[in-house]
Image 1 (tube, one colour):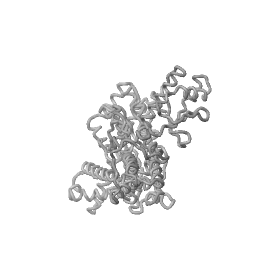
Image 2 (cartoon, rainbow, N blue to C red):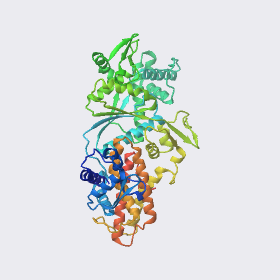
Image 3 (cartoon, helix red, strand yellow):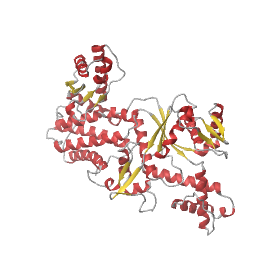
Image 4 (cartoon, rainbow, N blue to C red):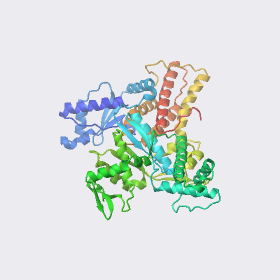
Length: 544
């Protein structure tokens, strides 16, 4: 309960001032997994042992003696080497219940941070269909965006469209070759061309729109523009089915058209951060912690990927963002220091944060699956949605932090049992709705006009209210540490506590007042559970 944690921190700071005459920058408060160790605990006595040159247990005892109670505690214990465990007066939990019922979906919303973040993710080359790795990146970025907004940050979600490099010319040549084949003509297929079925589909579209026009005239610009447009349309369609949207689709090509890439090169030269060697232009990234200097213009005059990326991130900063967050694949790990170093040449402080997304392994029948049985190609986002469903995929991806490898078990994801964690969580929401439906259908009257609670004195009730009360602090911490997987962990814990409550408590009590209080508790759980599921892009069904 955030308001309780803040009160507790204030009391501890006051006790330190009274007992030792000192101030500290922060007090760490945690929620013990085992309730025998209290509702809250702090290790402040141990962290101050060196500074105060005293035994942590003695410090803890002095803090306890100096604490103002304010009617908050049933008991305060000192445990182990110096932990202070706080056992709350259970009536404080009802403040959380009132707060949720009043604020509803806005419960847990953070205050406006005054920080505008540009969050870039997916940014797949528009040369094919999104695969399972892109799917994980899409789920991660969207969940993080939702979490950051909940915590009070302003977020712009951005997709960088790589439509300006050599791979796009290879795409255009690939479509052109397939276009010629449709007319029984031969055209050399690029050595590094693209051979997916979608390339043939685009060629057919070009034939329908233009007939045989490009058999007789150069149509490479049209093939390039039409190919990117068609594939980008498909990417957006798949992302939309996955519940992922973007505020900005930014074209790499526009950086060249506006002169931003060339201007960035000249700006780096003017700042003295470049030098020529063997006909190539190098950037002095070692001056900012990179392991070696990097080429930005090759000896043949073409740009490396780094230069337009620098120009792109400069352009982001010019739009007024306070911070930039990029979610990149594991293969970009070594690329991060050079990009951050380059940006620091234009900013006084590091403004770019890069989160690395690790690989995902798809399992079925206990074995790794690399190819789609339906299409005979790498497993795509479209395959996953069709075979398993968006909710299950989003939930499974959100269970893991970005920097951990993960296994996606398709057999588990489609199970309609409590073994499947997304089914377990969604069933908790549906179960609550079923209770209200039963109450309405069978004539159990209840009221929501209650401000005091006299019939919720049960350990399972307290467990539910304690879990609900931790939600605002969880939002703050998860957003600050980019740990959206903690939301999924919270969902699972809340569902566990709800199912335990449902199994052991008579909810539709004969006493109208008792019945109403329990239903209000269930409504509070439903509100928070639905909100948490929404943060990871998962629906909260009414029935299952």
